[in-house]
Image 1: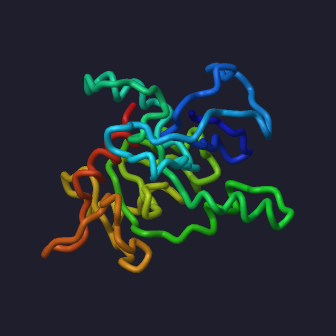
Image 2: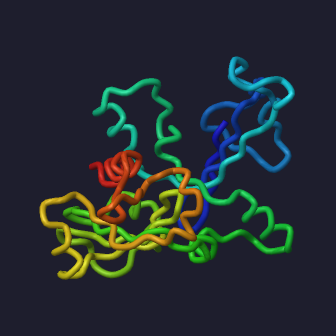
Length: 219
């Protein structure tokens, strides 16, 4: 089950997985309110999760591309989960909204994204700003990109900030699609998503990063 939450800064999703059943009253496109039942905790898929480890997998985050459906069809991939395919979901710490509300405050996506540390900076070739910033316009600063954009990115792949690349940054691209300018190993930690990887030449986009970039810049 995926819920879409309105926020002045852009859409926020919450995802609930491994359910034994989805509540039959729940319908696609329907509004839900606090306290509504979404389903029953389970261990699906049953072949890989034992009953003793039944749990609800909770994710909260932002959507990488509003044009993911078109990218997915262009790649001829299956099965299709629309915008809410895991490849298109960029999560952040799900405790953050709960801790904010427990302190008696309203959760703000802008404030939270501002608080996330930058894991890496990348320059990418693009004729204008990526479609992600259509949904999250507060994260983009200044005029549209003209051939290249600079992004500050979280460890999970959330573009925290973006702007047109400077002439010096653009020059680092050459004929490449993207260049990782710098990365912070401390923020990356275990680097579970491996969007960026390090080899003997320095930091670069890994295989997961190439896919992330493809989705982010697809038009």
